[in-house]
Image: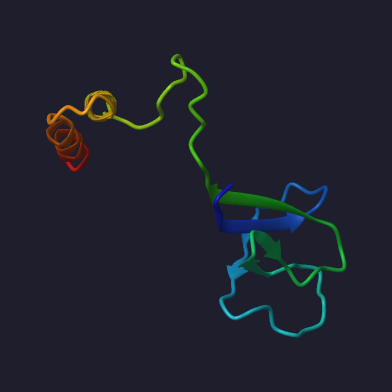
Length: 115
């Protein structure tokens, strides 16, 4: 997870609908606990909530990192990136051999990504 986008809550052990929680930007307010968490704050790679007097279920939508490339058979999870990656790979090989074509290959890869 990179960052949470939205959070919902409901009372644990029920089938009631999840209720969306509100994000806060300047820290959690000082208030008494209720049956709901209601608010959340994202600071230092942690989610903070005021706490509740009952157990609640959470549902979370978040931005995630793509899977790491671990070998030559790893899937690249970027749509329509095959040609751009081919040009970037060729640019790396060309640069390692001192070829003047390295910059042109890299620029073509960048052009393909910007389409």
